[in-house]
Image 1 (tube, rainbow, N blue to C red):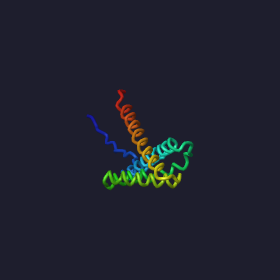
Image 2: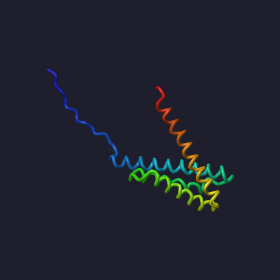
Image 3: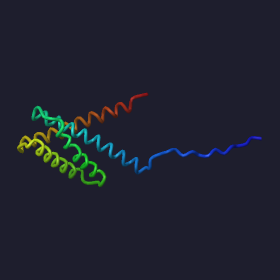
Image 4: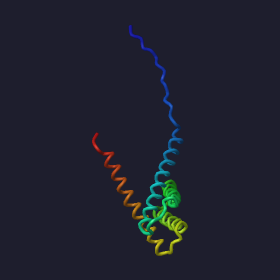
Length: 133
């Protein structure tokens, strides 16, 4: 005669879904902020010459917040882009005190560098993720 022993189910320790989602959002926002701060530094260095990296850490977080809020509340992407560019311009003016023409150049270069570098990084991650094991 075969007897079946009843084994109690052991629950695994997991974070609550809300906590996991909050940590993921915060980590993604921090990484995106760092990326935008780095591209702001690259844009300023390209147009203005030798600039310090430290003040450009101010540029990334508000722009990343605009992107996250626009996605979360389903704002118009065009409205979010205009708001991000306006905040970008205001922050570059605060950091460097640029005239309008130079300010427009830095903002356009920052936008361009962010899009190109973001596309390259995303493509690289997609390529590595699709590689055979």
